[in-house]
Image (cartoon, rainbow, N blue to C red):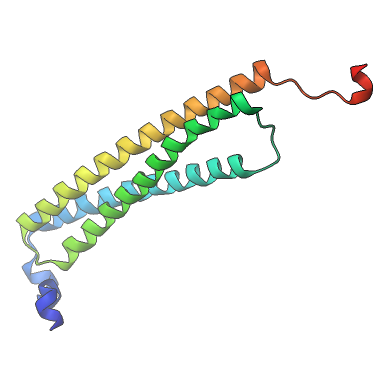
Length: 156
């Protein structure tokens, strides 16, 4: 029953693979490696941004300026999309390995993984630009508008 669901597992691996299939498989593995690196960076940025926003060890702007934190919401969504597209690239590679070793099937999986990786890179770039905009707004507030509170005895 399992061999009906996954026919590639019942075929001999080395004898049915062509040199073209092997080349495509190697290229697809390279795409997976690039995608894995982007996933690592996306997780690092996501965790760092959330740690900064949720920590209490830095100065937060008062209400009207606190709205700059809304700029962080879109990049968080884009970073989640980076992770989702990375998962798709990796699952495409696994799906190719489980299917019959036919060049056209490998090419189809390569095209699908390439499209997913292109979207992943685009989402990552957008997220980084938006995080940079938020950081620039926060730094402008911190440099130009932040006035530390003076102790009560010095205010008189």
